[in-house]
Image (cartoon, rainbow, N blue to C red):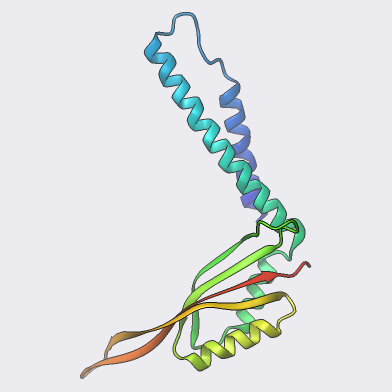
Length: 164
């Protein structure tokens, strides 16, 4: 997390230095000026995106638990039949700007998914645990003799991360 914040800080500093460099000289042609204007617009857009990311990371790091603790608690609550394919941690748009966690993954059954949801709901680190969607699909597996078809559950869970 600190490395990410440091990287964003370096990029931010580089963008500011590039922006402060001389924009035009008296020898520039209109085409060169147009190219420099477009370059500056691109830098400004990148700088605005970096500022948004910086704000989100600062809010997450100052208002919630460290990311390593969140991942550790998730790993304790997971069972052997449920896997995550995506984990998103950002801040919500409310006045409190709380950390929001979205988990996307696959489970071998509704029972194992329910067990994972129950563990998350009982974990003090998370609040408002909600299953956003769950859909069943068939996964083809090849065995030594014949192909097997196994049912899987694709899911998405959202919750908020309580403050440290």
